[in-house]
Image 1 (cartoon, rainbow, N blue to C red):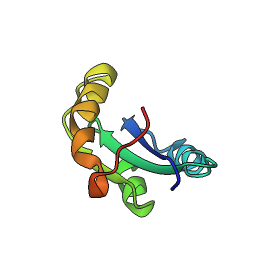
Image 2: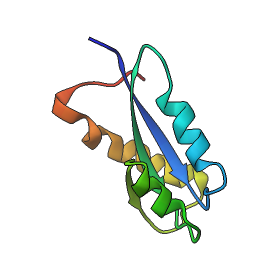
Image 3: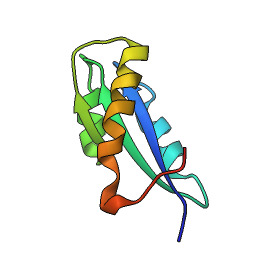
Image 4: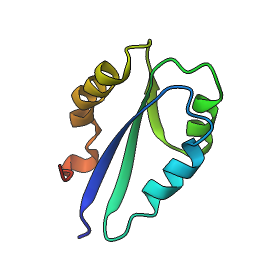
Length: 88
Protein backbone atom coordinates (compact mmCIF):
# COMPACT_ATOMS: atom_id res chain seq x y z
CA UNK A 1 0.00 0.00 0.00
CA UNK A 2 1.29 3.42 -0.95
CA UNK A 3 1.83 6.06 1.74
CA UNK A 4 -0.79 8.79 1.80
CA UNK A 5 -0.15 12.47 2.43
CA UNK A 6 -2.77 15.14 2.97
CA UNK A 7 -1.54 18.56 1.89
CA UNK A 8 -3.24 21.49 3.60
CA UNK A 9 -3.30 24.58 1.44
CA UNK A 10 -4.64 28.02 2.22
CA UNK A 11 -5.26 30.26 -0.79
CA UNK A 12 -5.91 33.95 -1.20
CA UNK A 13 -5.99 35.52 -4.67
CA UNK A 14 -3.68 32.76 -5.88
CA UNK A 15 -4.70 32.53 -9.54
CA UNK A 16 -1.27 33.50 -10.88
CA UNK A 17 0.59 30.44 -9.55
CA UNK A 18 -2.13 28.03 -8.45
CA UNK A 19 -2.21 25.72 -11.49
CA UNK A 20 1.57 25.32 -11.44
CA UNK A 21 1.58 24.68 -7.69
CA UNK A 22 -1.16 22.04 -7.83
CA UNK A 23 0.57 20.33 -10.74
CA UNK A 24 3.80 20.16 -8.75
CA UNK A 25 2.04 18.72 -5.70
CA UNK A 26 0.27 16.08 -7.76
CA UNK A 27 3.52 14.95 -9.41
CA UNK A 28 5.11 13.77 -6.16
CA UNK A 29 6.48 10.23 -6.40
CA UNK A 30 6.04 7.21 -4.15
CA UNK A 31 3.15 8.78 -2.27
CA UNK A 32 -0.57 9.21 -2.79
CA UNK A 33 -1.30 12.93 -2.47
CA UNK A 34 -4.62 14.42 -1.39
CA UNK A 35 -5.12 18.16 -1.16
CA UNK A 36 -7.50 20.03 1.12
CA UNK A 37 -7.72 23.74 0.44
CA UNK A 38 -9.28 26.58 2.39
CA UNK A 39 -9.81 29.75 0.42
CA UNK A 40 -9.37 32.82 2.61
CA UNK A 41 -11.81 35.10 0.78
CA UNK A 42 -10.24 35.39 -2.69
CA UNK A 43 -11.67 37.95 -5.10
CA UNK A 44 -9.91 36.63 -8.22
CA UNK A 45 -10.42 33.33 -10.09
CA UNK A 46 -8.91 31.11 -7.38
CA UNK A 47 -12.19 29.29 -6.62
CA UNK A 48 -12.86 28.67 -10.30
CA UNK A 49 -9.37 27.18 -10.70
CA UNK A 50 -9.77 24.93 -7.64
CA UNK A 51 -13.09 23.66 -9.02
CA UNK A 52 -11.67 23.07 -12.50
CA UNK A 53 -8.76 21.06 -11.03
CA UNK A 54 -11.05 18.94 -8.85
CA UNK A 55 -9.45 20.08 -5.60
CA UNK A 56 -11.36 19.54 -2.35
CA UNK A 57 -11.85 22.99 -0.90
CA UNK A 58 -14.03 25.12 1.29
CA UNK A 59 -14.29 28.87 1.69
CA UNK A 60 -14.37 31.22 4.60
CA UNK A 61 -13.91 34.80 5.59
CA UNK A 62 -10.47 36.35 5.52
CA UNK A 63 -8.66 35.06 8.61
CA UNK A 64 -5.11 35.72 7.49
CA UNK A 65 -2.50 33.01 6.83
CA UNK A 66 -1.94 31.65 10.34
CA UNK A 67 -5.59 31.36 11.37
CA UNK A 68 -6.55 30.01 7.94
CA UNK A 69 -4.02 27.18 8.33
CA UNK A 70 -5.20 26.48 11.88
CA UNK A 71 -8.74 26.16 10.53
CA UNK A 72 -7.43 23.63 7.99
CA UNK A 73 -5.70 21.64 10.74
CA UNK A 74 -8.95 21.48 12.70
CA UNK A 75 -10.86 20.28 9.62
CA UNK A 76 -8.31 17.75 8.35
CA UNK A 77 -9.24 15.04 10.84
CA UNK A 78 -12.63 14.98 9.08
CA UNK A 79 -10.89 14.50 5.72
CA UNK A 80 -9.52 11.00 6.15
CA UNK A 81 -11.35 8.85 3.59
CA UNK A 82 -12.18 5.29 4.60
CA UNK A 83 -10.47 5.74 7.97
CA UNK A 84 -7.00 5.84 6.39
CA UNK A 85 -4.38 7.81 8.23
CA UNK A 86 -2.09 10.33 6.56
CA UNK A 87 1.60 10.85 7.16
CA UNK A 88 2.42 13.87 9.30
